[in-house]
Image (tube, rainbow, N blue to C red; front, top):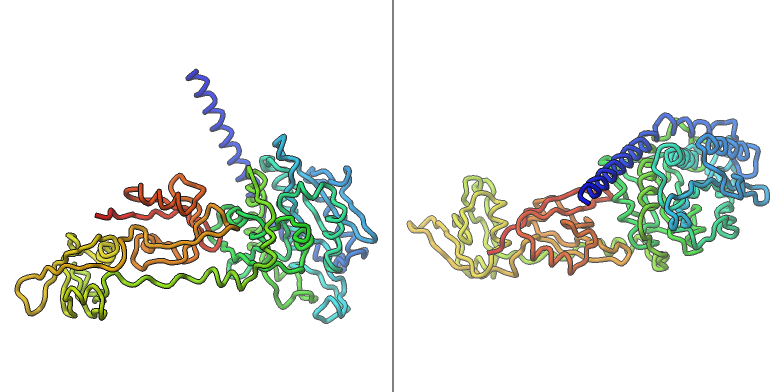
Length: 501
């Protein structure tokens, strides 16, 4: 039996190593050079701006199909790649999932391949009559989607759910392609777990990606954030759900959506949207994040259902919820000279009227030598001692006009603090605590936690609730390891929890 267990452990370790190697190879296959090549091809003058239904638009469709065939991805319309409607055509390919049950569910990932051709007064900001190549809108999304499709088909481990790759036509005419698909789906809409949209991902600025739709199902923000392993890519989670791209067709049918976008610019719907202005390295960062997100979402045991509330939640609500709680009153009520504190003495410079410090008789000019039985080694140690001390507290104080140290007894405000933060919960972000108050100088503050950070796990607890987190704080002695997210960047933070005597 022991040999069998060891053999199984060996095989599991081998499988994990192989999966890691496949993931590394898949991510490495998403290259800046290939992304630029796709954008340059699709935004070339020969496609005449890829207007839906035009010869340039049809030529762009042929280019996409040739790439999908090269990757070995089969068509998803009864073996064909084409879903024609009127004079327009959607292009669909599929990667079948590996799990016997989950493969009947689909992660749909799409990007529109049409643009505005030579421009008209209704779709161009001018000048019209010139080719609008649409390098960012949306050759960038197409290039990212092609690279991700290739990475899955040729390098990655097959995910558990199936992935449906969709290249929409007629988006610039009024979301025609995606609207047609949801009216005539090639797989039942109920089997679409998430519909992803890549639209204009070619102008990353300030290393910040806009991500929309994460409130359309519980847990989507966490899925996106935990997929981000790039320390140079932060995320702005936008709560807007406008009818401005293909994701909206799925919102209307109550399908959870996620959209990546790098923002509008002065070349939007103008002839100047050319490949030379695309941030190729930023596209690579975005495409690699897209691969990791799709890979994680496709393997997730359970994905949340559509949240109708997301339709009413906008930036105003985000701003309201992100307001921090009012600061707590100071426990002691005094200020000191940081320069004097370097040699282990807290020189009091101000005492707050009515504070515990004033009640105990402390005055400006006093030097605090000990607090709650601890010698003062630094300002940080003093702050920690004040925050975590239980009442009553005895201090050792040297007063300039007194030869003998004084030992006043203080009754501090509030309760002892071990961590030093407050949090809220959000039904759109289950198993997550959102920091809405941070006490300056507290262990949480010293560990680098910020307001509005998300705490996704603590120790070995990955599904956090207020109750489970409080239980962990009460039962943990010493350092506590937290998985914290700031602007979509996850990191591990170790908080040194003091012992409250």
